[in-house]
Image 1 (cartoon, one colour):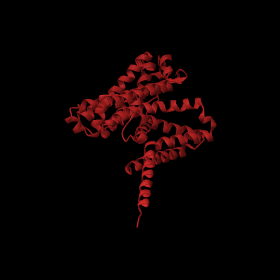
Image 2 (cartoon, rainbow, N blue to C red):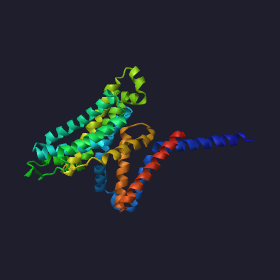
Image 3 (spheres, one colour):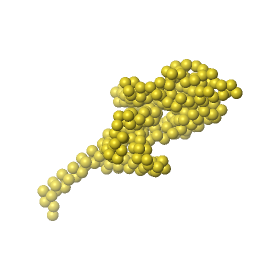
Image 4 (cartoon, rainbow, N blue to C red):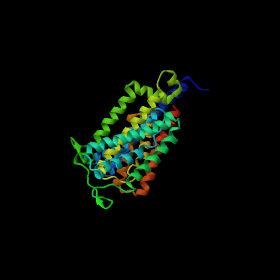
Length: 340
């Protein structure tokens, strides 16, 4: 027979356990990130220095900018798989503009942004107009612009001093454009400043404007959103436009950092950016695409890679450790969410 005091004790224990689970659900990923920072700092004191912090931030800036665009596309229930190809295409286009055609850095920036909008336009035509499923449509766009970048450049990298039909290319990367990749603002790399500004802008867009509420409503139930008077097609087009522009900005910064147009330069950024955006679901119990979570997801991956590199972990082991930590953090977070 259970006494009243025993019953109250069990209820109290359950409340404590439930409260602990709720805290772990909201802050679990942040705790793991903090634990990594402490561990790497203890094992390698050089990790916890300001110069290394800038290295980490600069390494995640391009990934984070692409991930912010992917995050916006996900709010409507879409998924922009063409983001990495867009980054690569912009890198090649900006290099061609300056090196092959000897135009200004400003012209290269405008050309890069227009390339991002072109990728977004194709995605909109396929997903909104033709109503092709987002994953299939953006996968097709990925291959389309990967191939287009190779065709335009003949499958070769674009670098100052290259020869075109036996004649040296007339142009080079301008100093102003190169500053975007190697310059600083108040000792902070330009790419990091741009990343912070875009993250703030996307956060405001999604959480403090009617456009953001409409995007989330479409992602929750597009038919209900349409019946509520939301122009679903227009907002989905807006989401892909933001994604394309973010990928274009990332491509411009990457091109400026590389100082050349490398074939396949944007290939690694698709999976990394998608991973950062998905990790963001588990930050602060959001359970939906959000800018703050995406930033934390990008930092999580960047800190992990930087720390493992400083520990001289073999490259083939780094991939496994990254996957194990990411899967562990996500499984813990989502399991706790279901059990709340």
